[in-house]
Amino acid sequence: MLRSETGMEQRAGTTSKPLRAVSLFCGAGGFCEGTRLAGFEIVAAVEADPAACKTHTANFPGVALYEGDISGFLRKRAPVTVSEQAATVGTVDLVIGGPPCQGFSQIGPRDPDDPRNLLYQEFLRVIRRIKPSGFIMENVPNMLSISGGHFRDNIVRACCSAGYRRIAVIHALASDFGVPQHRRRIFIVGLRDGLAFNGDLEATCHRELAAFKAQNPVTVWQAISDLPAGVSLDDQPIDYPARRQGQPSAFQKLMRLDCDSPLLASGYKLARLSGPAMLHNHHTKGMESRRRAIVALIKPGMNGAALPRELWKGVRSHKWRRLSPDKPSYTILAQMSRDLSEWIHPVENRWITVREAARLQSFHDGFVFHGSEYQQLKQVGNAVPPFLGFAIASAVKSLLRPVRKS
Image (cartoon, one colour):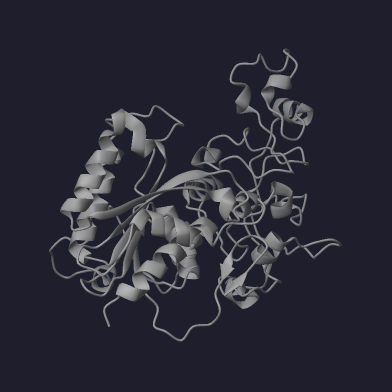
């Protein structure tokens, strides 16, 4: 095993049979990508959004994808889908997924009655059916505290009832694991009853996860400075940028198509592309003249509070924010699809592009997003950062390998 400057534990070759995983609420596939890099074989996935399904299929062509509402997955009927055939009892080691978090998120109304809050029940229904050795459920930290811990207690009880009484709740900051973004998430890890495991599950998970922590956080500029200042005006791929003097950074070597590393080989990244090595998704929303004047006055790391009153009256000053080049990004969110004014490029007087947002989420340049620009930004913002998924999946893999049935 090799350790990179970004904190990524990079896999040496292995001849053992990979563990098998199923991904629920998979979206574009950030959690899938991280789990695959950790050495799992993703055998089936479930997603309802058509645009996200298109992206997932393009990046995981060998994975059986159930395209539809999860409530219809693994229901008794004939004929079963290919994805259901892949997700059979006794063949799956791990189930991963992040039930939609809009009802829990601090961004928005935080409605405890939001019906999406109950989608964790569908996650656990699938767990009961497949009976994997373990599972990882991702969500926002608010899931634990909203309604006085009501949902936290219900989820823990439901896990115990499903046959997973050993539960660990892991709080993680993405920038601790090589992601150039301060994104806080929780991961609920469960280990199936009856499997041999000694010790405290939560303490063990934290110990295993510590091996993947970065020595230093990756900054925005270390993540995107090699990408062109100009953007694609017609949303089509553009020529891939040549390496410049002093670049690439350690993080950029992991992202770029023309760089090799033990974790992300150039051939692995290029294999995702249907044609030559081009830069995909390097486009962004247009900007009207008034907004351009506002953006030009905001310095790196600053927000709308510093704007002249004739341009902005100070209401919701965080609405206008320019990324600091010397720090990790603040959270990349799905609301970018509606308004990018909180994600201004650290140097250029424009919004960040889809590709720059993807870099800040730790998606390499061979991972291409499909659909409209609105849909692409939504997919990027909703995703689990692959490097964060890689760290948590690797930590859990170390628990599952010893208890896997021969």
